[in-house]
Image (cartoon, rainbow, N blue to C red):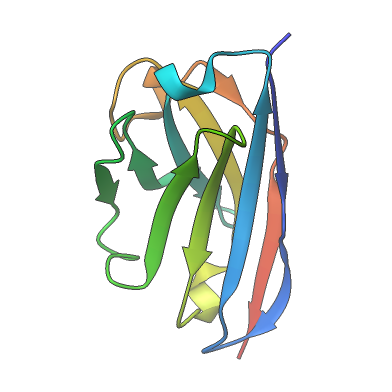
Length: 121
């Protein structure tokens, strides 16, 4: 079956950088659009970034210029490089895979279990 496994979360200070990864299995990774979403305490899950099969990217306004999404099809892995982290970036970060390139959660079929990122001030 399809599995998406996130890793790399942790506790960092404001201004630090962190890279989270998502390893996929059970699907033809190169044919899927991949995305990152996040859910902060007490808030709904929200779009962060997405990457198409040809590595076109889209970002939420709140992370544009600070976060970079990338993919390595040979490793079936998608990454989210996060720079200049802020306390408001604290959330559980989820990766998702889908056939439609979009910022909408409903367009993604498969989800990981999430990895916690905490940014202290």
